[in-house]
Amino acid sequence: MPELPEVESVVVRLRDAAPWAKIAACGQFRPTTARGLKRTVGRAVEAAERRGKNIILRLSGEAFLRIHLKMTGGLHVIPDAKLRKSTVRAWLTLDDGRAIVLNDPRALGRISFHHAKEERSLFADLGPEPFSEEFTPEYLIAAAKRTSKPAKIFLMDQRAVAGLGNIYAAEALFHARIHPAAPARQLSAKKLAVLHRVIRDVLELALRSASAAYEDPGGFAEAEDFPVAVYGREGEPCPRCAARVRRVAQGGRSTYYCPKCQK
DNA sequence: TCGATCCTGTAG
DNA sequence: CTACAGGATCGA
Image 1: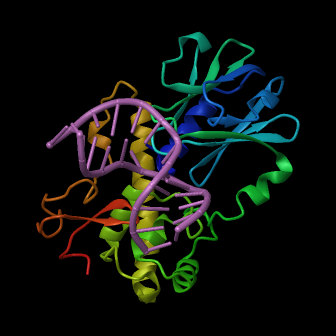
Image 2: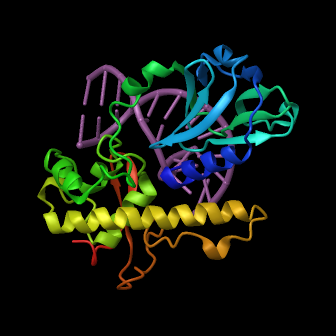
Image 3: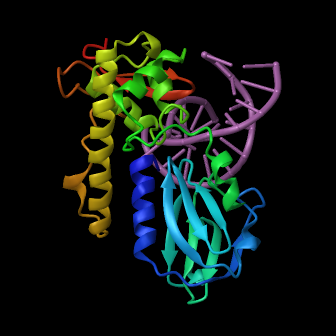
């Protein structure tokens, strides 16, 4: 389920499980799910970080695991590796009996082991973090200028900005009142400055609902849920003008937008 | 830039 | 049964 806000909340949750013990054992059901897991055995987990939609688990001995949750993955710490659900595709058993598990019904999630020195090249193609100082209106304007993609595809391109996916790209475009099919390079600097602003607003709000859901694992966080304006709302009234929300295909994915507000 | 691919689950 | 799913990559 994860875009930047959800991945961030997974990482925050992992940090709550610190300090971690050493990795005592590992396992996986398919060879494709994880590469190099065995090389983690005997190492200590030292930190959990996020880069775009990637999770980085720092390990002792100048190494790290890169974990990508793709569409349906989740990373959890469970009290006992033996208690793992059937959809757990890979796991790391810790010295203290707990386990870090990749739970992923669709099994698209991936884990790979790397030496610390590989980090730069591994993430070389990722664009700036939306909350970094590097991500300025000027950056977005320059990035838009050198693409030929429509606005929605541009926002989902991890090389342009890291962390946006299908939902928040659509939501940001709605709030910036930009048509998802509009060529990004033709957007005015003013529009792109607004887009820059709402990308941060949308992600910050989503981050808050993601952490609220965490503080209340009982599932009573409904009231704090992210206020979805258009995503998944085909045929429903636009919250701003009440026109019917439309769904179109872009790059093989669904895009939702208000045909009246987003020209 | 499209379509297929990786996978499984769920809604219609 | 088909369509589609909050991702990303690859080849045509």
